[in-house]
Amino acid sequence: MIAQFSESGQFEPRKIAAVLRTSADEIAMTIGLSKDALQRRTRIQADKTQRRLRELVEVLNKVEPRFGSGLMAYAWYRSEPLAGFDGRTAMQLVQDGKAQQVLEYIDAVDAGVFA
Image (cartoon, rainbow, N blue to C red; front, side, top):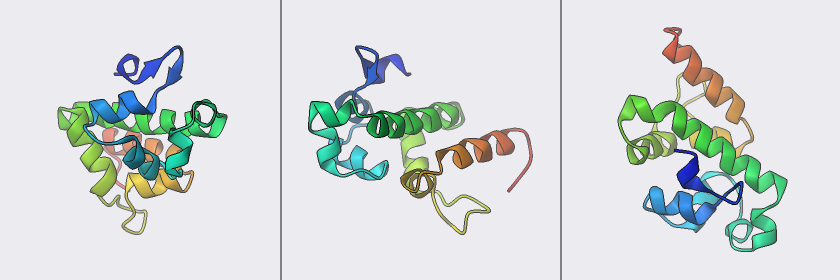
């Protein structure tokens, strides 16, 4: 799944948006950045932008097998409250810079440990 989201060794927001059937502006919102961050080439290449795009892709890759498609994984990411996080979604946690906690939560659920 990663190859379809990248170009020249970097995550490409327009490719991510196309696969998820949404807009680059919505992708920016779901990772906690301004839409400007995904419109200018220099901002897209910035470390923070690439890190947030990578975090989104990592989370989606981890849950896609469970849901059967990238679109369903994206819907889960945006809307499903996670147990143990005060009803916050994976999207809200990533927006707050807590993607690692989301990945650890997914690993714990997969291992049979429920938060």
